Length: 452
Length: 174
Image (cartoon, rainbow over all chains, first blue to last red; front, side):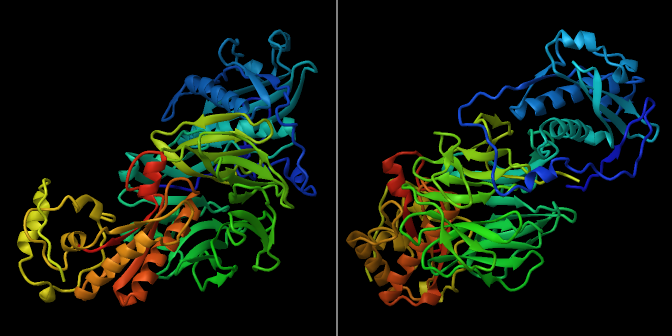
C-alpha cells in the first residue's frame, strides 16, 4: 500500500547531466532560519505582499520516449504545471506559464533566451527537462535563473521511478522556493485525513492519504468503522488515529511499511486525540476515565502510559513543541476551554489563552514560534505566540476546526464545515485561503513532514 | 413490572421476525453481548411492533420507560428533573430485568471540537451511569461509550436539532 520512496538527487553538469545517484537528499536550505528566538516575521495582516513574477515554461525532453508515467514530452509540460501551481500556492510568487510561454529547446535549458523572458516581466526563470533513462528511471532537471542578471542561481536533478514523477516536480519547486525565500520546503509532502460521505446520521468516514495538492489519493480503511484524527509520525513510519472499530473507541497505530494496525494502549477506557512527539518515539493521547479526561504519554511501540495531567475536567488536544520539551493542550478546568502549556513531564502547567468563547485543538508550529488553535464559538482558526496573547484569527466563518501545520510553518490545513467537512488551506502570513481538492468530503487533515 | 402492548403503525419486518424467535422468557436467555452493530439503534426501533414486547427486550424497555435517552444543555452534563425521572424509570425497569446489560452512549451536538466532544460525551454517559448506579443498578451491568459529535440523532444545524443530539442514550440489546 504505502511504500517508502526514494528520490536520488543529482547535481547537474552540462547535458547529458552527470548523475550522483547516491547523493544525500537535499537538506532544506532554510533550516537555520527556523532557529530564531521564537519570533516570526510575518506580514501585517491584510498587507499586500508583492508576489514575485517567475517564468515556468514547459520543460523539453532530450528524446521523446514513452514511460509508465507517459511520454517524456508531455511530462515536461506537466512538471512545469506542478512547479507553477506549487509556487502559486505559496502566495509568494506569481508564476507565468507554462501556458503562453514559448518552451525552450533542450540545448536552451542551460542557455536561456533571457531577452525573451525579460519581455514577460519575470524576475526569475525556471527551466528544466525530463529524460527517460535506460534503467527505466526518469531524470527531471531543474534550473533557476535570474532574468535581469542573466545568471544561473541553482540547479538540481531528481532521479525517480516513473510513478514518482510528481514528487520530482514538487522537489524542484521546493528547492526553488527555499532558494528564493530562505524558508523551509513543504511541497513534497502528504496529507492523511478522514474522507467523509453520506448524511450526518450515517456518515461513512475512511482514512485516506494523498499528496499535499490532492494528487495520488488512496483510501487506507474501508469505511466500516468511523475513524477520526489521524496523525503522521514525523518519521513517516506510522500513522496514529482513533477508530470506533468493534464499538471499542480507541487510538490505533498503523505501521505504514507492514500495513499492520494495532492498539496504542491496552485499556478498556476510551482513548483519543493522539499526537506524536517530535522524535516519533512517543504519542500523547487523551483517556476518559469515568467522565474525567486527562492527557497521557506512551511509547509508540507500547508500554505503560504515564499520566501528565490530573486536574478534574477535560484535558485534551495535546501537541508537543518542536524541541519536545513542552506540550500545549486545552483544558476546561477554568470553566471554559482554554489553552495551557506544560513541561513534557506534566510539570509547570500554565494558562496562555484568556479570551472569551474558548480555545481548542492547539497545535505547535514546527518552527516553534506560533500555536494554531480553533476558536470555539465562532469556529475559526487562529494563531498565537507560545507565551500567550490575544492571537490572530486567520479565517472567519464556515465552521472551521482542527488545524495542522505545514512542515515549514507557513501554511495550515484545517476542516471547514461542522456538519459536512471539507479540507481548506490557509497561508499564515497572508491569510489567503483555498479549498484542498478531495474526491469526497474531508476532515481532520494532518500534514506530513517533508518526505525523504 | 408493567407490560405494555405496543400498538403502532410502523411494522418492522425484521423486528417481528426477531420477536417471533424469542418466545422464551427473559430468564432463560443467555446474557446479551453489548450492543455492537447498531449504536443508538433504539432510535430506529421505537416505531414499535404489533404485539407483546418480549420481557427484557429493547422493545420492552422502550415501551416501559418515558424515554431511552436524556438530554443536556449546551456544554453541560447536568441532569435536570425530567432526566432524573426518566432515569428513575430506567432503573426500575433494569431492577426487574436483572440479567440485561446496557450500553450508555454519550453524544454531543456539532458545536464543539471533535476531541472535546468525545470527552463531553463521556461525561454525559458517565453522569447517566452514575445516576442509575445510585438508583441501585449494578455498575457491572452498564458500560459507557462516547460518540462525541459523530452520531447525531437528527440532521440539521439548528437549535432544535442540537437539543436532540446532546444526549445520553441507554441502549438495551435487541
